[in-house]
Image (cartoon, rainbow, N blue to C red; front, side):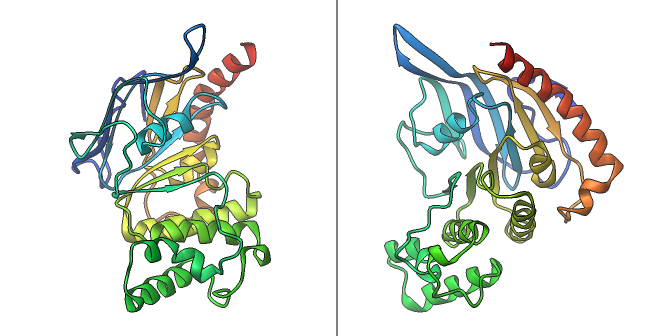
Length: 281
């Protein structure tokens, strides 16, 4: 079910990604913020291997460096030491590969653009021809269950609908690797489950490699092939869990199974140890 204190984070031993090539690797990856006299070590000596088509969640207590780790992989912030490789090639500092798509914690819809124009923004910047633009945006709107809202503006939409727009604006660019930083964290429980269903439905068809940051264990179990649990700050790989639930998954009925309850309890114990460590600091 799990392996204790792996370094590097164990590759999957079962499931569809087990025989696939490695897409993302980090070695001895660390990040230190602040000055020499006042340093905060956010992430320390993290080794990861993530294979093609895997859905991997980074889980851990607040402040453990989950988002920092994701942002280093994305090239949004430089590492302090260590290396990041994509498809076997070491990435330079401040990189952002066109293979990557990034979805932020909050919806990033542009308030003066309609749903259609928000979703198609990246396609416009890429100079896609109008026929391709219209087809891709139309398909994205249908996938996100936003038909009828094509000309609506963000102020007219619920939080969940705006996040669907943000999600599809990234997916319409067809990234090979999707980096997601707690994209559903601000949503209520019902809307979050609806977004889980949407994301699972899209991922089952497209099978991008996904690295998903969350502090929500139920969310990680619902979506993931593997969960990488980070320790309290400085974030290190504490434990790796394979999530062997069959796919396709239903975001509601999955949580009613005994298998889900057993794995939830097991991971919660390990996560709780780190949360208690944060509370005592």
